[in-house]
Image (cartoon, rainbow, N blue to C red; front, side):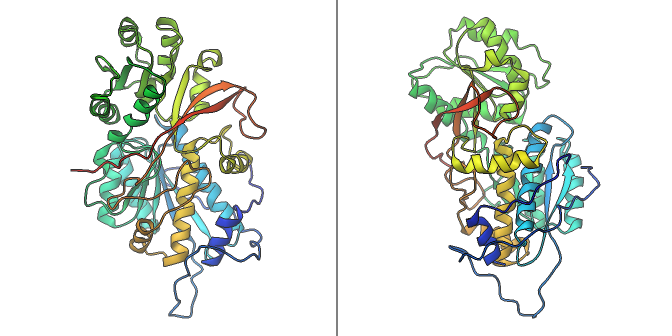
Length: 430
């Protein structure tokens, strides 16, 4: 981290709740030392701390693993997750920790490779982590899910939408931002119907996420009255020439281009849509907005580029969190991945305060409770097998700036919430 964090307390409810119940692939990273204690107001709505039967209170740090792509395809997502987790840990520590114990974030780079991720997972387990957060890739997620179930250590998926990451028997795998791919076409269809569209184009990447999203479109759009023609399947590399795929959609006279199934190609697709189709919206793939806008000319993006998020960028909670985040991180914008990372540490810390640091007990606590997370667009809760129980993604567009003061250091643009999904039906594995 280039910037040093100034001491910032958690918002009162979270800080008091915690007090009441109170990077290299091979290197462990500890957050900064604790600062001043929290306030003296009475806590509300918290679970009593576990009874200490030994008479000795542990002072060992509570280790939470961070396993995300930091050097490959999904690095912008991974850096956001990492910094969100580090910020939450720092704030908790500044407020006195959890029952006096400090949070330590142990970082590992998945390199967007399941074999590398498996080795990194083993390192985290050896470090004694009580949970792992940050899984981004649909290629890595099934491996992480299997290891979580085998080792009985909770793992949080952030942007890994592949349905194969969870089974009906999953109990330690938790999806926390992007819903499972079979559920992700519903918000797109909802927006198309709200806008009176009848004809859209779809382009997906030829890997697990793209294939899953394509299947979701076929199932969700059936009988809706919105036609989508032939789904265009493009190679994964970001230097792919998308011209023939976009031209096919132009020939079909589409009213919107759905590029949600192709994360690496979004920027190039938006530019081609402007040239070959015209002024129609293009949906992104749950990408950090500042990354998208760094690759797309702002004049092209404004009024055209749209995307999804689990964070509510228009909320007061997001604004307060983002201001603290931008003081902490070298990132110029707080994407929903960072909001999710912050929420993961917040939830694990609450669980440890309530039931102790046994990963099995933490997983049980997560399943048994709902969490109102700062900056989130909806309450976090899970099905028995770890899907989000009632996800309501935000659908947003890019507008001209300036942004509200202190919320965007990435450029002269801002975000307009266009729609919020109705609660999504959780995907049920076979």
